[in-house]
Length: 626
Image 1 (cartoon, one colour):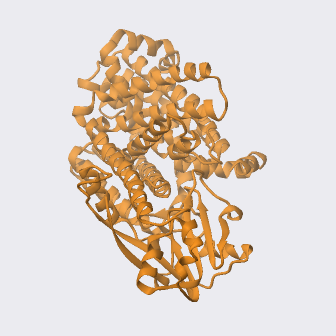
Image 2 (cartoon, one colour; image 1 turned 135 degrees about the vertical axis):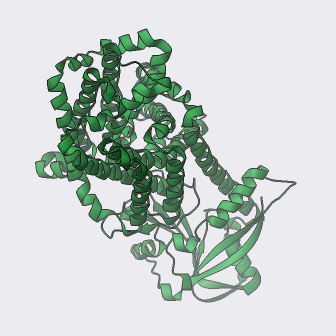
Image 3 (cartoon, rainbow, N blue to C red; image 1 turned 120 degrees about the vertical axis):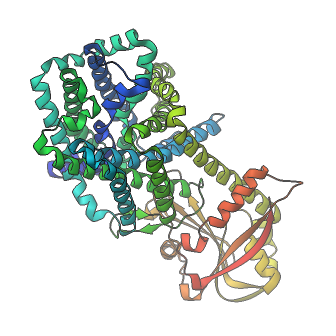
């Protein structure tokens, strides 16, 4: 990706295309926040009086939140944490190295951030689409009864098209979002021109005065101010798709000016007409443009939702590859773009959760209370992990990291603390979702470690097996590939095959698939082939966490090592473990054991996940006590 960024910087046309794509994908979430953010600031915890000081103070808070959090923290600092061109919390976790005594803590933080992102992925489509469709109430009161059905229909349609891929629709994302930012910026600019006094809010002293004069009430308002920076994580998460330079250009030249003008325009409207607080975004729009703006807002929120859904898909795949989630069926919807994937189970689980949120909360104001905790929690975790990377990878001195961390954490923890006050109003939703996701990931990881421990204890050291000549079994023609998770133990499937069939193939291959903590492994480094003894080989296939394993394709690379495979004469032996509770010597707590067993049953078959031809597979079962 560093090469791609260099090319984009050297070729203006390529840079423009990437920046256009970034505008559509990266800024969909943060770009639709004006639909509800300013209104919620005044509605926080019982409502805030519409006075010039309050309006200027909140406008100043919004302005400096965009500058300090998005521009300085994410664009200028966090995006420096480049994991071979990729970003996102999993890539950031991998960059920390996870070593030393702090390793388990860093892993726990990374998983917590990923878990909260899943909560964000559920809430964003619900609040974005619902807030856009609520513009119908501004157009005509009698249309209010249609808001909920239309929202649900749009969401069901959005999730239904996922299986067809989003490549064609994605081509429209950039141009639509450009129109969106230009439109919201223009309407805001017109109102600012009519009431230029609102520009005083550029002075951070107005934000400081608001915070000091309103104390607890101002602290509560901060829980809504954070809504203006939702989607900031997307800048970093999508770095691998577009590169650092195009994302920065799209932010500084398009998204930031459009957002600033619109927020200041809304504030100017409220300052002149306090009654406009009912829905300042749509009341900022002239009557002749209201219906077109509702359609444009709906399109923009669908784009924002699509970007988050794609992000959930990407994060889920990374978690699967790194061993934090069970294998799920992954369909590729594009022959050209490896990132275009579809996860059926994740799609319908997301839709069910989104529909429940829309039906349960019924308005964007209700959902706003549930939104902030997931965002602020992830922001704080990103700060901690990025500072660890700055110290370990970039060799920044501890004093600099502590000073920078203190400045950023004051903001992050301020936002997080303010949102904790909203737990009774709906803030519990992302916490419950995050806790469930965290429990799933940690249980699966711990369960896999426990399973590997049991399997290794019941197996035989590989060097001992080879010294014994493979048990002096009868050798039969053909090639047998035994899937294994350990480089030093004999797979149980081989021992069971020997026990029952008393024979070994003339060529035996121990195949291990390893997911590395880097985004991608180039084809030239994909395969390692080792000759162990006469007729015995060990093959290691390496993938990055942004790649999907394809064992038959990888085995074709073995020809360079003098080892060729004919799939029609090759048999793949795969172990299938049946988990049994061991009350006397359990490696897992009762609830973790039950959850891990359930997840194992739901996990996709190894043959499907690794794309091994089903007619060449032999499964050998074993009972394992956990």
